[in-house]
Image (cartoon, rainbow, N blue to C red; front, side):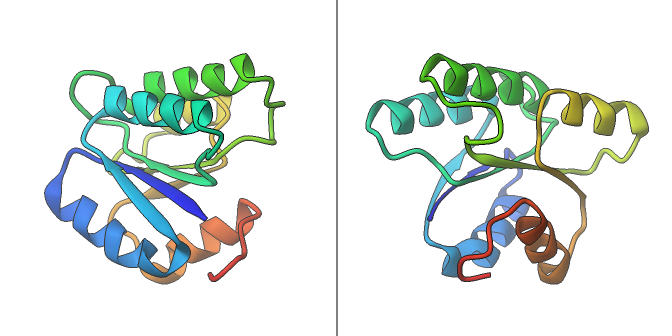
Length: 133
């Protein structure tokens, strides 16, 4: 399984990378724009990400905008809603406005930092990705 972690904070990136190690190939983006670029490249190469962990508060492009653009990239490639990458928001924001906006933009799950391995894996399973979890 291909995984993309979009996170600007080094410590959070490191933690997620370690937790995702046994799930498959894991790439990292430092902001929302890099995440969108990585998704476009992966789609163009015919090797899309199965799972994307996306922070909200990032420079250059925040996670909400990145999520909308990623879903737009999938749509442009003819990928029906629900058939693309499973996108989990991994954010320190736990207000209802941020959570509702994420789900309106078609995220598949929302985890508030700090989270545990068990909570992360439970959210991945809930999103429908059970391989190696």
